[in-house]
Length: 339
Image (cartoon, rainbow, N blue to C red; front, side):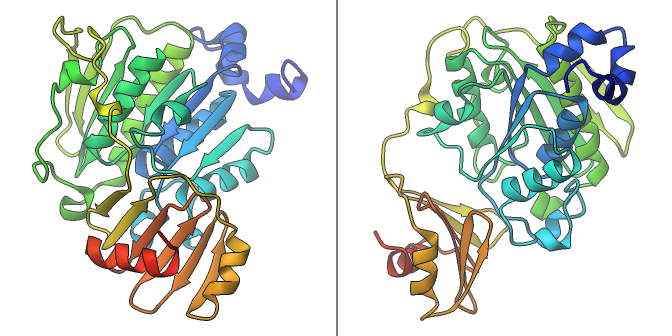
């Protein structure tokens, strides 16, 4: 398809755009972008990346789609509720653009797997909803030498900044993670969907400039769509930054062990086993049918026990929904999945 009449017609408005042109379009087609998080920001940015003709888009997300996500999730609807976000988004984008190269990774990006999940990407886009994982992404991108574009939204405001392997990086902006509970969340404070669209659009603009080697002045953009406030600030690499100016990768140094996380605002607990498994979901479905209602949703198996449900992936990772109690979730995991 590259270079033929259909290719020229599809990308005609970018081919005549001075900053891109035919050479730039060909470079976009050779670029792999990892989008970490397939929610409000990730779904918006992924669609734009695919429409623009980026060569390969890797979608990484740990969660399943909920009804409350739909007012800001691009191309997804009621039929996708309960499905893994990355899987559902990749499937719909492939239906819209069959010639696109899209990869769904239904995993939780952690200190233990971040390097493997991001390896091979030319750049990374932030579609996350928590700062802890962003610091892991930052360290991984510094280690791999990959630029990434930070983005955050809540209520009607947003932040965007391109971050470079040689600095500035996230720790130049925010040296340490904020204290738990100190930031507003979408669950408690709400979010205007157009804020996600604006921030994602700026992220994709930065991604385009990075892919074409045309971004040499990193700046932080802070905006609010409700008040029309818009601030642009130059950012510099800090000489004492432990990540980009040194070689400290403390956020990648998490020790081995089971990771259990209560998901804020979702009445759910995520369990990541210490060792990656390889579960036969068909066999497990036959076992679970004896104890509850079982359904298969793409790469995920769901056991509905009434008040709670277990959403199991082949790797052994599970979301226990219907409880925020870690002890209860771990007990259910042990009982129905195993140690």
